[in-house]
Length: 50
Image 1 (spheres, one colour):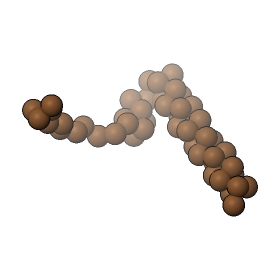
Image 2 (cartoon, one colour):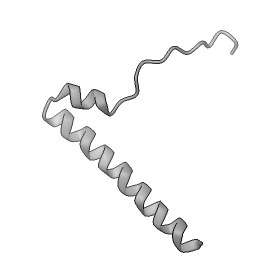
Image 3 (cartoon, one colour):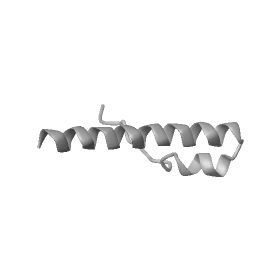
Image 4 (tube, one colour):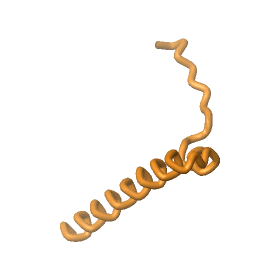
């Protein structure tokens, strides 16, 4: 089981690195549509209870 969790960690790290590289490439290329595809949509947050 330990080996599986280590492999999962490596796969997760690779996914994060791929996302960061894609984000940076979109900025370098000034491809704003592609950049938006890597961002979350707008959200409304209600802080009135804090």
